[in-house]
Picture 1 (spheres, chains in turn brown, green):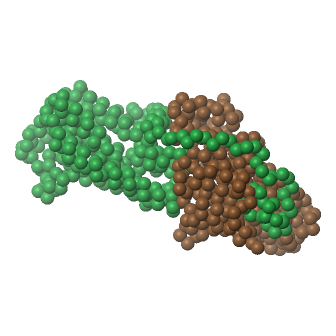
Picture 2 (cartoon, chains in turn yellow, green):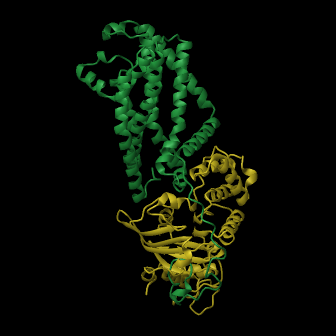
Picture 3 (cartoon, chains in turn brown, green):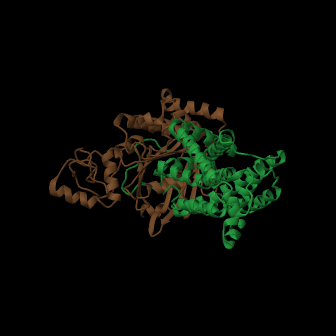
Length: 308
Length: 310
């Protein structure tokens, strides 16, 4: 049975996910393009789901549907127990959205002026808004920058400010769309640490879209691979990036290409690791993640992510 | 692998062949945070926050403030000298008497055009700005309804414009000796009338915004409409100088009624209640239509996924 077919049924974790994210049968078409097709997704409180997939797979569309800014053609979405299709504004009160777009702030205002404004959009009165803004700035570790204008923030600071903004409404759900895309390694680790803490200590349900397989393995309790608008694969987190790489390549139909390239030139794996791509024998450093069956021989590409 | 391996995630079992998850992920490690009490978004609170935001933003660009005042003085000087040039001749040509003189006639007409133009274009400008800077999507992910963030986002611009035009009138009276003839009751009608006039042209602005939300272009529509108002509404000359057809058209547009109300209250010593009633009756029709159309346009773009696009 294909994963897509299996996904039509309710997720096993769904009962646990009532306060988190529950999406079922999401369909979305833009003109002639089927952006999402029968997507089911559940993220219970206190867990992180990493969403992987090549460009154009539908990750951003899915996040926008979960964030209630785009309506699905079919399917249901529950955010923190609220129907996000029927009651989008109420659902927005339960979620925090972190965008990769660092220009989503008013740059000539200070950090706290920005947050106070967004807090008002969450229904907070002015004094509450200021207090809450200070609280979330403290929470993400940039309280000393509160009165600095955003155009003088570094990219890493803006990423933290973005997470702070997402926390203003005391959300049950956090949606992150490639939040570390343009961050340096230190800021990336900071962001991941923060996300993990929010999920595991604060109990937020987190959906984390990324292209970075190392990041996915670092943060995720579970990984889903979206390809051509469908959940092509799904597995528990905790494994290696190489194992995830194999899964992703197989899910995107690039395993054959990889094999041919390996036969032609050899190499050291997409991540520069020795034989990170599984051979089906269990060897190859896939860690806790399992390769798809009969997928790939020991091989390597000699560096470079090479995803479509 | 059984489906029960997938306790978290897509509701899928792992892809066939995947080994069971290596670590305990079968449940939340911490309980979910308490769901926040349903917080109601307060429209006035949102509008006030938008005004504070835009005031702080405008204050960070101090130079434009100075420019606006230079612009105001330039316009007043121009109208002042123009009034000296045309003087009584325009009254002869138009076959009518302009109480307060041509200067007052033109100053009040142009002030109202500026206010109407601002009311009609400020929403679209703000929407465009939020789309291009990326702030729109962030605002749309909050519990505030989109129409409120659009309306709130243009409030500061409209208030600023009203303040500038008020100062302009003050300078016209204090420096250029513009003659006013206003009765207390007329001033009351003027204040109420300005609220009604603003609501009317804000509604037109929302219709323009709805057009832009769907078609992504159309800022020129508002400017074109305001140009037509200037042509037919008696801003620079009395309607009596127009050919009969254009005059009839001019008399039928609400902008002309608004100009009449302002001039009547301030320089003709009138209490233009009839004009106020006409404008208010248009408000009653146009405002619900504008809100409905804007709501529909936003809903449409939520379906097409293009609300943040420009």
